[in-house]
Length: 92
Image 1: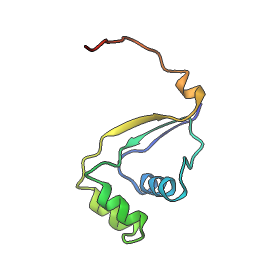
Image 2 (image 1 turned 180 degrees about the horizontal axis):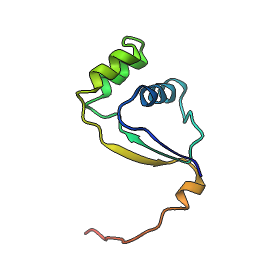
Image 3 (image 1 turned 90 degrees about the horizontal axis):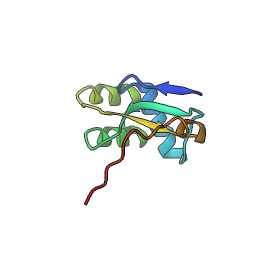
């Protein structure tokens, strides 16, 4: 099983986001990825990088002021099969 973790808002992470947005779909072969979420705090800078307005260095410089939350994404059936339901809640 291949797992990749991005350690914060890095150039590698930024280029992965750009490639996924420009090419569509998923542009990697990892089963599981862990890393920052491109959210409202980062979106303007990320979009300007994707559009070629900012270089990677300029975008990362601007992103250093952003607080990013991490997410875990499962990209294959093998990865999903590792999940285990611990508890279930019924609302309503």
